[in-house]
Length: 247
Image (tube, rainbow, N blue to C red; front, top):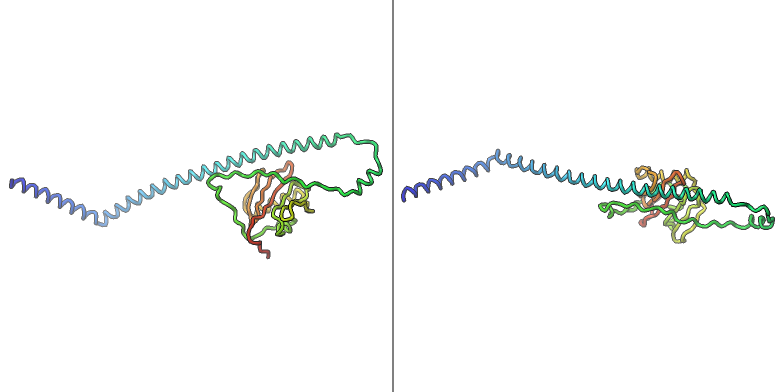
């Protein structure tokens, strides 16, 4: 019995010595540096893994946007091609209509004096861009700055006008507002339409591509179909908000 008690005391003393030595080592500066180094390595590895995951998600979203943009451009190009062929057929049929040889002088006289009323062209059909779900919650915010749109500047500054429509080259510009939908005396040719779209592109630093082009600048939203075949067309919408300050 005394031998067993002595052995137990020795084992217990060894255990106490080991624990004491371990605590001494854990409280040394070298051990603390080693622990900090290991934790830093672990944190760096976790950070790199998180950055990889974020980069992968960003690339997937960018690829999805590019794919949708290509699909929309393909649809628009096909529609523009069909519309162009339809217009050519209509023009061909118009030229093929035989003219009557008998001319009534009274009818021609009154036809010249009668005022010619032109119907208001329909609103340009511009498809909406489909954004990925991750950015669909974003909404444009009106900013009190303006851009020089030359002939359209008076319409942009008119508080009664909310929407400005241009249905193509040499077509009367149409406005929508408190007065309803009304045709104006403003007519834009191809160069002037391209200049307006170019002005928005330069102001927003967004390049112009054939097909759908939609940007926001100041308190204006431009939605356009860019085409060299039948001519570009656009709609300018004013966002509600405080009035624009003019210098």
